[in-house]
Image (cartoon, rainbow, N blue to C red; front, top):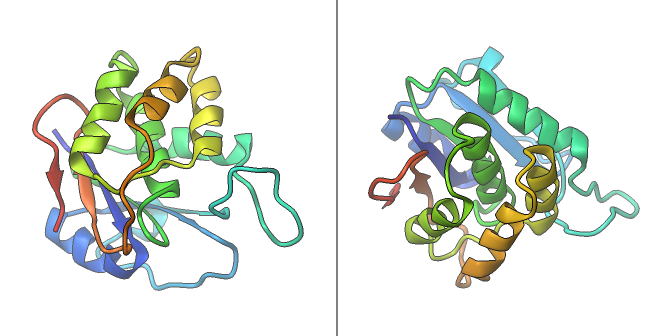
Length: 179
């Protein structure tokens, strides 16, 4: 079964090729331009202009909103799951792990939130999912606070340099580092 590859921006081409990804979700601040890897189908690439903040945006900062989460859920549900889905943000530590959790629950809603959060921590000691995305995702997916509690239970990840991609399995199996 295909999983979700979470990557920092600097390694998206490598991860897309290594894992055979053809679909990608990008969560970057507006104006952070980058080149979509050639192996990613342009029609299967969603870019959300959102900053990595957990408070209402001010000035040029765009906080995650319900609309962003709805796009993540819809994109995940359209994913054909024959190949891994690539999700990235700037460092692959906050926005993209939160989006990976939301995507995993969108396509596999019957799974246990605590087990999913533990799989995330096993796959990445660095992941610190953006709590605003998690909270909105919890509500949008009718998790009744379970996702929020599960993410809080794993705590903040270790300090990261933004160079630690990983694979989040959709269902329980051995989580693994991506490279």
